[in-house]
Image (cartoon, rainbow, N blue to C red; front, side, top):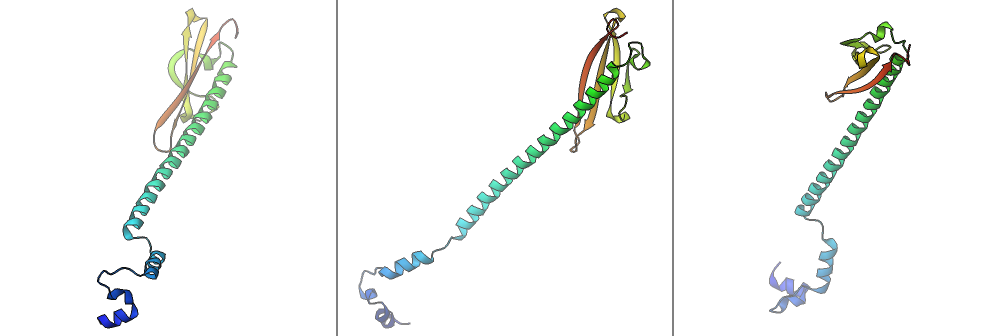
Length: 154
């Protein structure tokens, strides 16, 4: 297309100072889209937001699992401690010794208990320890201790 044909189509181009015709400006604005830079920046922001939300979700799920495992272990320790407290003072399960013994009524690898003597032989301290391993490999344990008195538990 030569200059004369362009001037015939758009007479405003004949002037020395060229301006954009009114209709062209509005058409250009209506057809404007996002540039590549805008798309890349928006994608990066979306990726950062998604990664942070994923880490928050992962952390909350891990915390819930830890709380659940801790509660189950605490209930096991309480059950074992109550069973040991229900035994007579001189029962074989409550023989004094600082060695680790498997918990009664639970799997052997669930934990252990110890019975130690206190107050000149009139009181026995029973310590129950329940151990478990979290799915991500962290070893956890919880312990409960109670005392039995000869006068209260004949």
